[in-house]
Image (tube, rainbow, N blue to C red; front, side):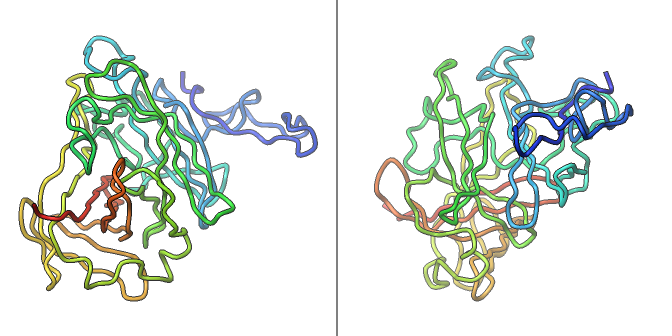
Length: 313
């Protein structure tokens, strides 16, 4: 099944239907019926694909894994979704992740989970997590997020829209929206909390420091999203506690350094690995409580880290 996968084909601008004047060859990367292959193949195709153009790149989103909330090791559909991201300068690809791994597979491999090796690819924009912000512990912990779309809106913001299931709540799901930003390396990072009307726009990240440097030091909850979550064991990530010091060091459960690029909202967080992201203000839903937050990515591994500043009791 080398010909299976996710394909793209050209549409007629007048009718919105397939443009039959455009033809496609028969090859491992092209099919006369489906078009040009941009991802998957050999039974590792992913699903819920979506492409959006943002800031110079076409970003391809896929959901790896299965439909359900996880917990049954023998059932593929209980694999739990994980959203992965690739990008290209061309809508037809090639689409690659931060370590330059192609979205197209040339052999059968496991594409998610603790046993996946070379097949585990794509930026993990975030995964199953809990005990975060004002989120109720336990049954409100998000898991199996997937089948997303992305909106580069006319209001100057970019939104990630997805559905999520929850820990120990069966297969019921809800829709969530998070704002997206580009980091210094032009990879997309997702705001750590739902969008609740925050006013910052995508273009401001590169031109304006939205959080004053003096407001950054303090106690933080930090969540490193596990790239190889074991959904059959209903695994999810929970935060650790650190202190961002005024001298640019980090102490606590993780140690390292942090810095913000003057005149921008670009932040670099090093906690054994270096993550590039943005520093913003957000609301810790469901309460109207504002907090300094960061979201950052290590593109070479596809791992995302979130953080938010909290007041000590």
